[in-house]
Length: 306
Ligand code: NAP
Image (cartoon, rainbow, N blue to C red; front, side, top):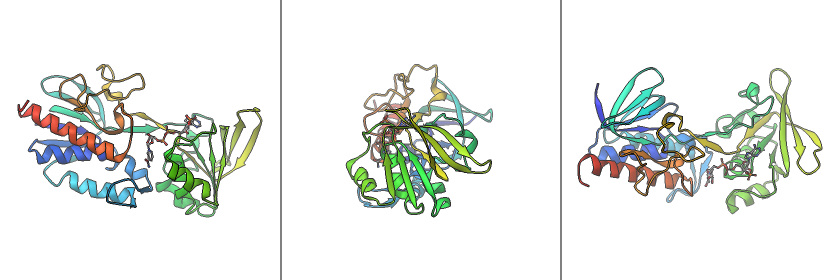
């Protein structure tokens, strides 16, 4: 079995940057991704906080990063990682039964969107329930849709959806936002956006083929009402994709990877980078920084410079 210097799990901004730094440093590098390259960038309509680019489509930035990630010799391939085992060479087990070995592993596997966990949600995924406005927004031309959540993702994607939808109702379970002020302002001044606060979605309704509405409960009075919408976009946060690291005692109580300043966990040469890491600010700029630091640290340790 061919052994790599570094296996990077996840081709979002953190993983792709780690691939650039590791391969440029001369490490044999394998970048694994279970979906399409780009991570959360692919589900982001517009990036306006990447220095040097005032406005960029998430998918375009992802495409450029993907080309860059393999420009210096890193190998990119599909692979869903289900388990990792520590050792002088770490072993990465894939869902298809294959196992791969490397000295260092950089977990850059990001997060997965949370589900509302209400009746009618799972049954209607792809039939009116979507977790990706960029992917599905155009299906809702002149329609009425609901976005659930009051964070950056919910507000940004609600604004994006007004390119297509006639009306976008944001449903928030409390009054306070969790988003940056510029995004809050953009949502508030958009005439196609209505914001309802202190409401909790309880059920998604359909006609057997497509979503027809969402039942919502007012948290103060308990009173329920029905909002007629054809599309529902939950943006209620996400959880770390770290199932393959369970049992290694490197996760916090929420499942995020605990690392030091060099991105290394308490297991030597096992790193975390990007949103998967316990950190203060989850942004593209902080993700790429993590990826660079992790790859550089791995380089020094593998080549014996430390
Ligand atoms: P988030 O910041 O965790 O916000 C989640 C929102 O959903 C909150 O308003 C939360 O309400 C609500 N919520 C949670 N569970 C709910 C439920 N069961 N029912 C109804 N509402 C529920 O998640 P996010 O917006 O996906 O952002 C994730 C991270 O990425 C954040 O760190 C964010 O800053 C970052 N991000 C940044 C940008 C940017 O900088 N442009 C863009 C996107 C994401 P409560 O407030 O009541 O908990």
